[in-house]
Length: 606
Ligand SMILES: Nc1ncnc2c1ncn2[C@@H]1O[C@H](COP(=O)(O)OP(=O)(O)OP(=O)(O)O)[C@@H](O)[C@H]1O
Image (cartoon, rainbow, N blue to C red; front, side, top):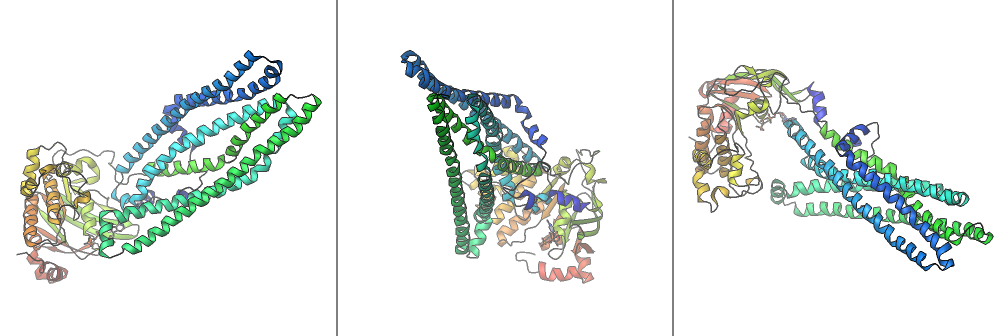
């Protein structure tokens, strides 16, 4: 059960999901793609009508030329010539205007579809459990939401609209060529198949190169995100890896340049190849047409018009020969987007889930089992209760399952077996939003958004008044510090609040929890040891926060275990000992050992 849902939430890295990779119609439903465009059907029709109009107008100039060369000029009809010349200028102007309008509509539809997809992906990602975020790289998520969605615009303009336009141009031009002179038309189209193979080959090489380039670019942006994120930058400096990273980046940087150069070169060869089509066609027309003119079966204007039409034919044919590459790329883009759209959140409300307005705060874990990965249980047979207002402290060696245990209370994950209850009700029967409104979760890493102190505090309660903010901060022993800042509560904190000290950040996080004023508190005490003054402040703030709330705390401080109503000692995902501090010491087991190594040495403790 768990296994299958896990597979559903882990984004596929390579293979089908590979950037620039091919996808087939079988894998991506065309109907689903069309559905995205349905709200814009009117505009799409207008785009196609404009494309058609442009293509038809484009057919006229060669006929005008023929008219001028064969009739107006030889007959000396100046006014007629003027009219034709006027047309020669007016027609491109009209088709240019149509093109402009079409382009505007293209962009509009493309942008609208992009906005819709971004919105729907964002909404779906917001509903995913933590399992999704721990399993995926944030760079990858961002890339799909921005880069891939951007590619949709390309799909609209390049693939859909331009291929339809090209088809219209090719068909109309062929029709007119054959109506002018079918033999000559046949002669000028007969050379087309010669180019199919090389054009396809070049297309494939380009696709491969493009895929590789995108992959390296993706890796580059992930690397940059990690290196220049605050934590990554800190780690780099601590371990003195600057030069090594510079070298790694240089390699990647060079790779991008080389790939782009190769892509460009292949592009040039491709252009040269297509460029040869024109002269070859023209030469054939002049050879055959010239002979026909000499025999009197064709006019000079006819040759000129024919040459112009053939010019219109070869370009679009080249593009159309590559259409399959474009289509495959486009399908790949949609497939990656749909993968995220199809992610099923694994923590959801049960159909009969109800909201709980008031809770007493009675927590019960009943024979809870949990596995992140099927078959490898992180928690086994966990049962305990915490009555309203009680504090249950968790201790145990690293990896014992403490964080996992508390995360189940906020339903960051659901148990694989057994149940977690609040006031006698299974958490899955309580509306998620309602459950979380009664819980504050203070983690070791006190994350702050890049925003002002007030905004960070209001993340807990957006309607909190300034007085309430200050009250919460007073109780968290941080108000005086904030008030002394030049901009007070409007001070912006750096990304992750790195402009604040560790202790200040912790107290701000405590104030944020205080502001929420929940019945239940989940707390992961920070292990980083602060200086004794700061430690004392944090300690006092925490005691204030824990007062009268049911608290599950991963304890790292002696005072916490001393005051806890109950201590659970975890080891290997099981509760191996339970009781009060003195009872557990008397047992002289794991707790007693941990106590001697962990708690006794904490500075600044009683
Ligand atoms: N997202 C995850 N995916 C897979 N396994 C995980 C995940 N998170 C934790 N684990 C594993 O689950 C077990 C329990 O981890 P947990 O973080 O709950 O331990 P802990 O007691 O809180 O440890 P610490 O005190 O070091 O934070 C560990 O073996 C850990 O490797």
